Length: 262
Image (cartoon, rainbow, N blue to C red; front, side, top):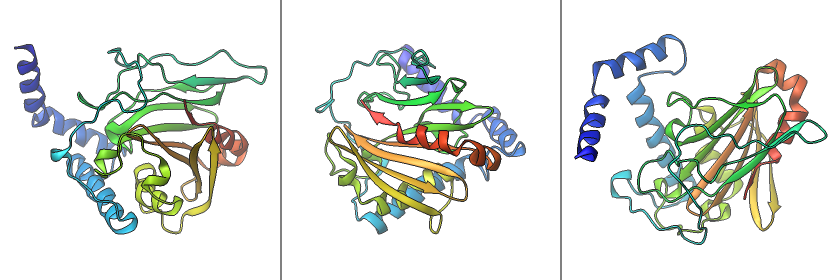
């Protein structure tokens, strides 16, 4: 009975006038562009059309998805919702390592397999900040961090079945495509626009047998690290305004290249 009531509540809320007022409020404050529903629809269509034309991967609609098991990576995942501390104590240089807690809930809906943890390093004054569905990446943003002085970052964790149905449960980034195909298909998830002509550099790094595609885009100033594990695609982006980019580029670059799936 409780599950039925919750379902009815969610359905009714999506069409509630207050929901529309929230979207309008965001528009008025410049947090999103265009209608909330239009933006979400355009984002899905854009991603699928790019993959279909650029990477040649067969796509499936979200209504026909099936959810695989845990695959090769068995991860403990509890039901603890919200933000969970995962930061280490500062090292000798004042940097801390964040590791996604095993107990942190997935946030991508019932039925998705557990998220394989990831880790990265940040200076001591960086902290976790709330995730909003108005952010670029929407509900697929798993984490955000920021420093008022130096910049901000986000982690998008997207089920690969949103993009293709033939990649299996132990996906590697090279199975999804080349660096050029990946950044063209998924770069708009991060910057909100086509990346053509904005990619300053790309690199492929390997750590413990896993490939990481690393990109620098401008404008806007952003560093993106992409990889895949289990049945998830990970997009780690680090950015800052013009002044932050100029003063703290070295730090931002170090953060971007520290990302690992563990």
